[in-house]
Length: 90
Length: 156
Image (cartoon, rainbow over the protein chains, first blue to last red):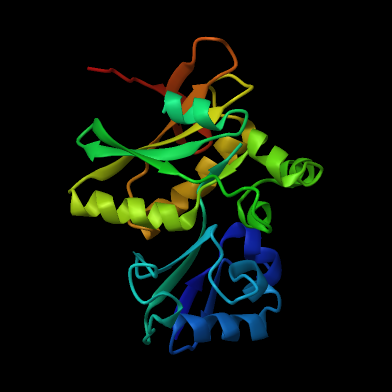
């Protein structure tokens, strides 16, 4: 299983769960799987062309997927994925 | 930072300072992407702030809020690692308001305490550049558990 940490702004889509478990072979695959279980989540993470939006980071075991292989980053059993909204303020 | 704030006024600028120990030697300007579609829904703004932002045009949103470009952040983080630097400060400007964290700043910084470890970065100090008076005002703070305490800054 892969543990995915869900940030507060997305929790309305996951019935307020801060962590969900999934099985997926890659980040792209994980986003599809999450979207089937929690419809709407893909739209919040990816733009129309399927690219990760500019104000979200996805980390696999504390490493930004932008340093790995982006959405093609492979996942294995036991990996921990964190979806992290961009730093913001007012 | 003041130059960055002035260049972007009346919009808010944002960026990072990095270095070693408690010394800052490097500035990273980060794009403010609050005007992008969907940005304010994913940032941890509270409902009142989102409602306020939605009444404004995308350009106007950047006058009262910032959302850091995640791509720029990733590049900055990569550069810090290459130079053996660590993140020390997250800064942004208040074009129309004092150099104090807003309610939104405190809420998001508090939410973010959980994230820093997960994204492999230390908890930074927060620095505000205010342009509300003719002389820019610069102040830094620690924000922990919803409490704000001033952080000392010295320049050499």
